[in-house]
Amino acid sequence: MDADSDVALDILITNVVCVFRTRCHLNLRKIALEGANVIYKRDVGKVLMKLRKPRITATIWSSGKVICTGATSEEEAKFGARRLARSLQKLGFQVIFTDFKVVNVLAVCNMPFEIRLPEFTKNNRPHASYEPELHPAVCYRIKTLRATLQIFSTGSITVTDHVRQPSDASI
Figure 1 (cartoon, helix red, strand yellow):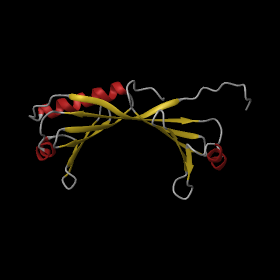
Figure 2 (figure 1 turned 60 degrees about the horizontal axis):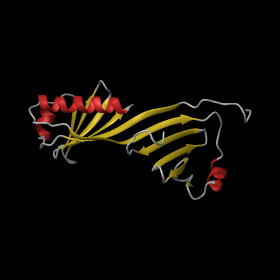
Figure 3 (figure 1 turned 90 degrees about the vertical axis):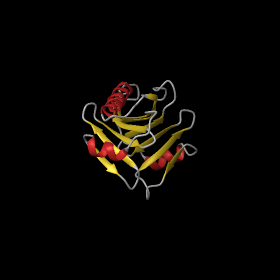
Figure 4 (figure 1 turned 180 degrees about the vertical axis):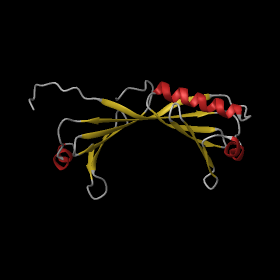
């Protein structure tokens, strides 16, 4: 591979995690009995609700806090969260959709070459850590962006970003 050849890297966003509040107390038992696609985790005190379109999974607590995972964009996450709030309204709760924010974004990228992890870790020591007995990837932390990269020897890179505003700062 030539050093001067440009290769376009495809960065694919695979998961967007968002949080919102309903501003009302939620009866988890009622949601479990009357809701669709619901798993009631009574020992933990939460309900898991799945939507098919967009394909998201929501974790619902009785306090009214809801965490949605599985969306592939910020718009899809907001649409899914609003749909979930609407389904809770249809179950009889006085839901007010507030405090929506995207808290985490996960993206993947494949490099066109393999990476020698021990050498990479030595060259990037303060930011990179590699424990092959614990995990097969190098954990590379970027403190200024609050992003974490999992770098595998195959050239696959997973980027996890704690989101601030604007949301696409590090990706």
